[in-house]
Length: 125
Image (cartoon, rainbow, N blue to C red; front, side, top):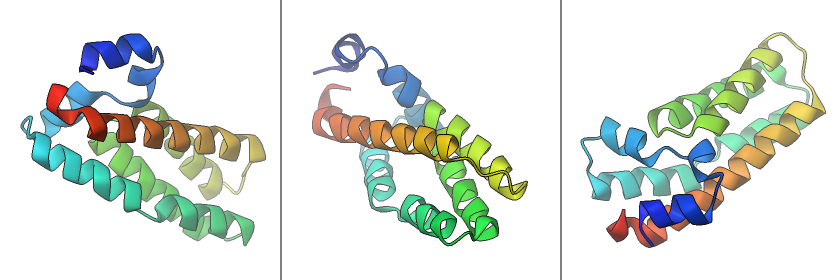
């Protein structure tokens, strides 16, 4: 499945991952791109952030959201970037909302799903 097929089959794909943008940042190096995507899949900042929120440690959770935001920006994950930015700002201001956590969870899960799709089809991208 090539990138055009993915975009056609998954109408919201580009909302979650901008492959051209992410690859462009690393000189179109597919091997490096797959490695970075794989590192994202094993990153623990999202789980840490959720645990920190549960413990009402909003200051530390804000730092975890900041780390997620940075990776999302660098790898061009638009929806995860925007929700993690909103989460970081919210936590810094002590204005945490459960709805925001649900939005971020959805963005994180969808991004992860599409990363797995990219890794499976990287030779065609």
